[in-house]
Length: 476
Image (cartoon, rainbow, N blue to C red; front, side, top):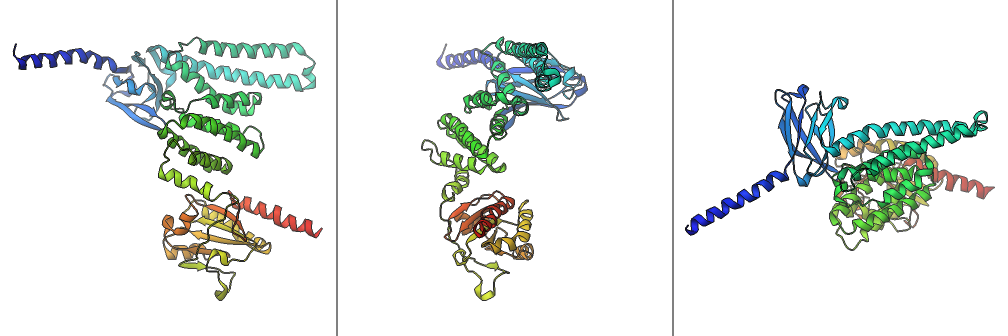
């Protein structure tokens, strides 16, 4: 055999050896759904906060299909037909899932004929909500028997209720304990249970709040299986929602959130990509809920992290909390281009922020195109006279780009309005690290930042409490 033939033989032999491995690496989901005949079917997988299409096939005229996935897709996924109805599945190693039914829109008609982890998942998904409903009913009855004098004297029903509650809990735990600890479903179901229980615990089982928060803190937010679960977003939102709605004072809420952030960052600091993704999502969540104390703590924590590089956009947003935190001196800025100051004579109109001689200055960054800015700014107009009486001036810094739009928008405002028509590229916006509108700052006459109000309502509350009531106390 010459060298060329030998090489060809080796290549063919290598292909024959490797080919079965390639086949084996592919897993499949097959099914029969007559009502979905000729429709396009997609298998969607999860990757952190995003989803992606794993495979797509056309269902046959008889409603039969087979769709593929591989090892990189292991975790949770869902099948979606053209009606956009989804059926959740576990994409597991060595498990070729087989299902049949009428349509994905009718899960009660779907039968899993092969795929042990999916069968266990389906069983728990059916039984666990019923147990939770029963527990809620027993909790309600228990409160009646403990608090209502008509029933409180009867001890045996209370004991029986407690015994039944414990039985239901043990039954649920026993099912989870029976799962093979090496399988994906044995990890997924307890996490899914933890997240789904948050609302009920906050309302009816408040004694479980500390343990539930502790369970969230134990989670590894860098774990690949969490990224493939479709639960990453929910786990973070539920974690901090529970803290926010745990009946604590606002100061205590921020302390608990800071502790949770510390737990999360301990693992995230070793994974730069996930640190950026999760920090950005968490930061936006805090901002959306006006949890600025938590935003500031997270921002300083991430910006001071030496082991990872923070992406430019996220770092820019977070920098506002380091550079513009309470107690810092706010930058001065000129009132360039257009400045409308209805309460000032033209000759005395301020040319820069430091020209304003009031005791306090509220700066509002916004624009006519900002969804909530018109409403917030219109609330200031009827309050402006009161604020001005107590030494509070208002400066609206607009991000508008068109002169006529700015003029039309601000013509009815009694306070100072300025615009340089440079939008996010404005030197003023950059010096204040503005990344969202509206953003509000309260400064004293030395331009020290006193407050970052989350709304005009909060700002007016500050005026009423510290200035109006304060002056009454002094006069009294």
